[in-house]
Length: 111
Image (cartoon, rainbow, N blue to C red):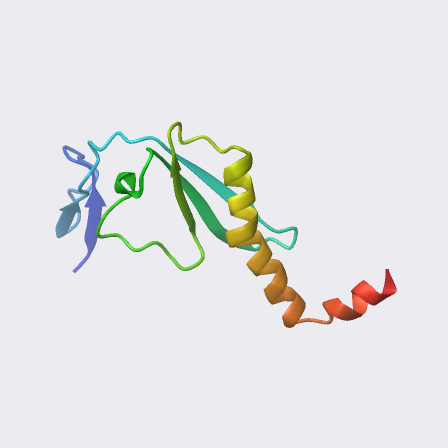
């Protein structure tokens, strides 16, 4: 059986046998997503910044993929603090993992 995920009142899924409406499309919370892509083309986990002062603004009953940096601030904007958080939670672990799994230490000695 084919399943089509659709928005409410979406006519594009008539040809499928079943459809599942997407819940929460009326949720109008503001978020900021920061994408990190390495020079080699690897897509790293995202940073998701929700608007709000506490973690209560983050979605409940949803588990983000491993490595995502989830936070909140009153304006949901990326600022210096959020950038440092991104570096600590996403970029630094990636670089450290690459250092352990390659000959990176040899390259450092050459410089």
